[in-house]
Length: 354
Image (cartoon, rainbow, N blue to C red; front, side, top):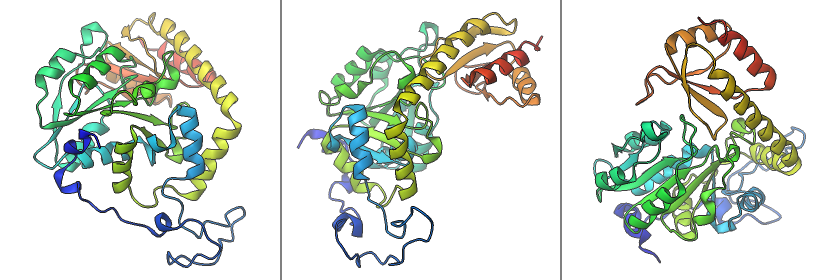
């Protein structure tokens, strides 16, 4: 066993997870062990919905392990990435004693989960002047033994840039046996660079998060994925709820991943093409101060007046995101890449702003 266990909350190291009926037995002809109704649901194609689902649906797990090029024992399925962010924070951080580190501006759920857990949040801002890059020297200077998790987002939300892989590897190496490094790759399908999942075998403190909510068009199905070495996966499975995935959601996801892969790749290609087109056009608008390059399915704009842009778009029924209250993003807005026709409507409305 690696030294990873020393990072986990001491009160959880001897923790006995809840053992569900489905954990103890999933195969059998007559199921009488889980206090379920023996009567199948009368809805069509839902003959098994009267039974509790698998804790980690085997068919979906195998399919996603193949897509992400990891072993079956290196993956955890969750109800969106939010759930595993919360589980990681609860596993490693004792209330009022330990902390996470974030690099703002970044995804807000890292701090939310820490606050709910009672963990402290240390902030080391990205270097805006250098395109929102990591300040690894500042991270190492600010790190203390109380910091058990560093959350990084790459491509970063809301700035859109990829973090330098060399910086991430450096942090993993310097903080080996001291801290886990979590890289949230929710938008990596829109990038031209590969996932860091290939590196989890080299660093037992590296965790990669993926999601089906963005490129795969399955936000409503709520499927997040954690990729890590098998030892850490087993710890997460100890504290995840016993039946996290509804059977209809699993069936929908498997079907979507099985029959629509080529179409999904084409959709990603269109979004990337539209992203490049919007990037070029938005630069020309008089109220746009700067458009940041993006590896996600969105663009971050600095404007002369973010609220004015928000109001004008809202009056036309176009909803974008105000980033004005985020660190270092004064008068910035974030615009998701829509369908080509939707993007044309957006540009028409933005051209009306003086």
